[in-house]
Image (cartoon, rainbow, N blue to C red; front, side, top):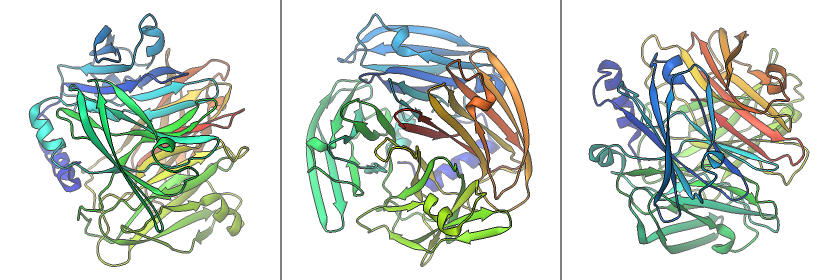
Length: 493
């Protein structure tokens, strides 16, 4: 884990000297999973945002021993979405993992590419942005791997129908008889496990918590410490799986900062999120932040009315997660026109931690036991670095499929300030599709449905590019399978 304040300092240096410590390779790893196809999708932001006319993309298929099976190289040159079914491209091989590399003679700036990995199954489509990569050099390894911490933000559910899993990925070196440490806590229950694991290079191993922990556990706090790996940055892919159908909904894990004292100069953090009235809207916060005691409340907006929920408290020493059902708050306030809600977190004493993370959970209303999306997000703070004259420029994916109720919500981080006009360009695999312009009020979100934007009959991974004058524009996409109600979602780049 890299220190947050060091991240801020490096961002400032980059804006002053954009050609210092330049990045010319950007990578990720995508796993092949049982019962589904592995896709990657991205818009050519290299061209659309930076004007780079040619970037090389190399796809490599790796077997279960860490050996190269085959590779393909593509030139990324067109202003369109590149949606690649890796399973189909390498269908003649028995693939375990995919290594994806972008190369450019010009500065890519960010070593993590803006790519969504999608696993498309019979009744689910799980999406997650790139979350692990091979590091570019030993100097980056010095910086990235200086502090090793536990990983968390794993929504736990173990019963007759569902299990919770995580994937441990390996980098360019084999993992040989290494340790994984797993801690579970809920109220007075404490469970500690140590596992020995060996994984070939450029591979992964799936672990199912029903085989490690007692059954019928939920709402507890799982913390997992991975083996330290040279030249590799990796988060866990973790989530819930239907034992019968093998459908899953998973996202990347997040740092545990409980032993790291790192704070903003203020006592409050916040963030605004879309409210989808025909979906479940919930947040779950885990006690994984720097030592502190926090009060959490939700603010709702309904025309000229404002509702602020009662405060709920969570501390870094809490033994269970804090969960808030926003739909219940909307119902209790008797509000009919809510399109956004704000999460407000205040430190009871002193400054607020830099990393206040939580899960933004959206999902279908029809089936209580369906898989819900769980998007890892962090709160904003007025003390964070914002370059002068920065404007809103974001992009991301939403799926277009007749079997899914697919939506996207645009909003600002802050519910204060002036409204602004946003311009949203939509693209698919053929290129530019259409533009939507809309005035966005900071206490509302703009919610769009895929079947209103695209031709619903044609399946595609579609992307948006949104711009405005305000620097704090954000977007969240979510899709729900109409039959199974299995859901997944992601935030913007």
